[in-house]
Structure formats: C-alpha cells, structure tokens
Image 1 (tube, rainbow, N blue to C red):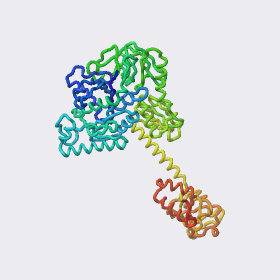
Image 2: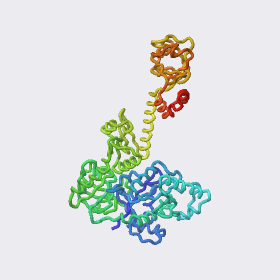
Image 3: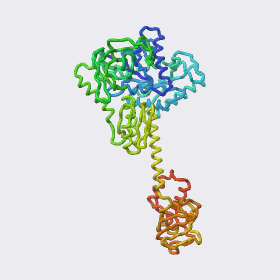
Length: 579
C-alpha cells in the first residue's frame, strides 16, 4: 500500500514553524469534518479528502493515490535531524519556512544545508505576508490577493521574494514563486503565506501533495502486514507509566505485546510493548495535561506513544523494529546502523557530542563538507573523558563541539564550544581556528628578528675591542640582544653580534627608536670595522625577510617601513636579495 508522506517543517526560530503546524491542524478542525484530522504522538495526520476539498481545484482534477499527509508536530530542524531511518532521513518532504520580512537567518541556512545533505525535497513557505507594509487581504486565492495589493505593497513583496530567490541561488538552489516555476523538478517553489491568517495555506498543501504524488510515490510503499519499523522522536516520563517513547512508524504495524529491538549507543535494547497510546481527541502533545487513550495496534505511517520496560539508555533519533522471527539479525542491523554514524572518525580531529543520533549525523555531514577532521562522535553530554581525548589532539583539534547537550568548562588542554544551532557551532569553531591562527602567527612573528638602524655617536667608542663598546642612537626599529650587526656600506658582511645593551649602566634586553644606549659587540674592532658616525643595521637573513613579508599584516606600520628600508640597502649590492 501507499502510505502518507511524512512532512516536517524546518527554519529559523520565530519564523512561524509552530504557527504553521497549528494553522494546518486548525483548518481541518474548522472545516467541521468529524475525523478530518487525527492526532498521534508527534504527528498530525491530514486525510487527502480534506486536502482535496480545500485545494483540489489547484490539482487540475488529478487523482491522488496518497492517503494524506503526516505532519511531524515537533517544531524545528532538530526534529528533522532526529528523524532518520536506514539510508537517510525519515522525512519524505519538508517545508522550509522563512519570514519574508527578515529573509535568511543562521538556522535557515543550517536547515537548508541539512535538507540538501539528506537530498530531501522541499518547498519554501515565505511566511508573514500579513506583516508586510500596507498588506490587506482581498481574496482567498493567494495570487489574486497579491495582485490586488497597492503598488507600494506589491513592490515590497516582490523585492522580498526576489531576495529569497537570490539567497537560495547563492546556496546553489534555483527557485521562484510557485506560479512562475518552469519545472518542479528543476526549481524549488516559494509559496507566500500567512500562517497566522491562513493565506496561501491551501496552495502550500496542494503543492506538497502534488510533489509527493509525482516524485515520491515509489518511495511511499509500506508493508502494513509486516513488522513495525520506526524512529524514536522523544523519550519522556509519564506519570503512572514511567519512561515512554514518542515514536513514528514508517512501515508495518505494531501491536501490544510485540517484542521490539531499539538501537542504542552500546548494545541494542530488547523489550516488549506494554501499551500503545495516542492523545484523546486533539490534545496538544506539548501540554503535560494531555490525556491518552490506549490502542491495541498502530499502523504506518503514524505516531504513537510506546510504554515498555527497560527503556533506560534509549536516545532520541534511535531506530527500532518489531521482531517477527530472527531477533539476532534485527539486532545486528540496528547496531550497524548506529555504528555507521558513530565510527567514521579520523586519527586526529575534533570531538563531537550531540543530543541525538540524527543531530550527530547532520553535524558530521556539515563538518565533512568543510573538511574538518573528526576524532570522536557520540550522543550524550560532555564528559571528562571527552576533554582528555580532545586535549591529546593538536591545538587546532583540541576542541569539543557540543550540540544541544550539557557541557563542562574548558580546560587548559581542551576548549568546549556549545550551541543549540549547528550553524553557529561550526561558525564558533571556525572563529576558534582564526584566533588560534592569529596567536600562532603572532608568536611566530614575535620570535622573528627584525631589522633596526642606528648611528654610532661622536666620541662614543668607549672600548676598541674584546669586546667593542660603542654608544649609538636608534633611528629606526628596535635593537635587541643577540642581533647580528652589519654596516650600511657593506650590509653583506657581519661585524659581530650584540652581547649587551646598557642605558646609564643599566642592562636592557632591547632599546627602541630614539633611545641612546651602549652596545657590546664581541669580534668587532673600533677604527678597523667601525668608526664614529657609521650607520649600522641589525640584519635579517633572506629567509627571515621572506617570512616577515609573509606575515606583513601582523607587523606595525613602522616595522614595515624599517623592513622596506633595510631591503633597499641590501638590494643596492644585490638587486635580487629577498625576492
């Protein structure tokens, strides 16, 4: 049989995900049709009859084979990443919702990347047209309604729509307003809507079922008579029941007393279904006061609450399956599915921790796309073991990236970066690398010798030799102990190295521009190698010069000027010096 396509809504926070889901549910209830909408754990099932009544005129009389749409209630792309089955995402199609007035935001881009990584077909809902300047509702048909707006409002909405088209194009996704699409297999449809007022919702539903009917039918075959296959959406504590699972079934059926195997981070968990529950009437699943009724069987595709013993250790996003025969093969298959995500790691790399296996998989995918190495990837809170593991890495990998889990403070050896947006987490890591690179470069530059210029003062050769002691004034740069000294007239010949720097008989490590100091230079001889008024330089080698040029942006303006002057002195004798 053909099951209902599983649809999820993703997008940036406050762009209207929950309102859209509530509006989709509300339109069915408002239609006054008994049973027009069925509430299940984590899902809202809208029959095709309801969709046809409201949007059938937009489908050109096409017969629909799908029984309806199964919307996942849990808002946000975190739900999308946690919904997975063997081979990819559990969701068949998605709605990427964007506030038309605000455009793309960090979570919008992140959600788009996740959709693309899972190759999940999607449409864009350009929400909050009712908040566009000057907007007034004129017609139930969204296109007629847009055409009836004032010139100023029309221009504003068109500008915002084309900004969305440009944003999507920048991400490699060709798109246009749904009525201007040349081919739904070539472009992504953008549907202007108001989740608050309901404008455009019928068009949105029509396009979703049309796309599902045309492109997804081959993927929607479900074996109703076979054993259940599903995904854990949430693990929750229920009074009188203890730990329960909110789950989605995407294949087969599940009965009370069925044995099920649930994947975990270690060995798969084997348990027996004690009870199956669904909300009474249309209770809000996020409301703790929701009352449940027991059912004897749940059939795909649907959501259901499962009560069973031994659920400790089950995590959101874990796949499960009912057993009708060989339990060992089911255990092995589910164990392999988890290992496929958690063990694809490198010898060196960051440590990943995430709230569920789907989030972990999404994080791994996005990091791989950016060529970021991964040493360990697991579900769960950050532990001391994670810090030790990260701390044993090279500095660029001494990081724990924690997505939506409890963290520990950073240590001297390891940095912990935590966020509830994958996009931000990756940005934070790239910023960490930038700062680390700046620090490494800064330390490298600080240890590189830099040229400085000085003049031997009159009557200031205090000692002729063993060592030469002479008074100088620093005219450019900063002289340091250990500097190699050359004469400007013969810059390719070293006359000695600075052993001591003194000012008023006090030893110094260095002396800046403008200071008069005494230098002690073993090996140099006054009257032979140097005389009063000679111009001296503390020299750098060609290799050191090239390194300083490479890190020029980390040098001060004065340091760059001194470096340039020194190179000009050297090139008077060798035009290719330092090139």
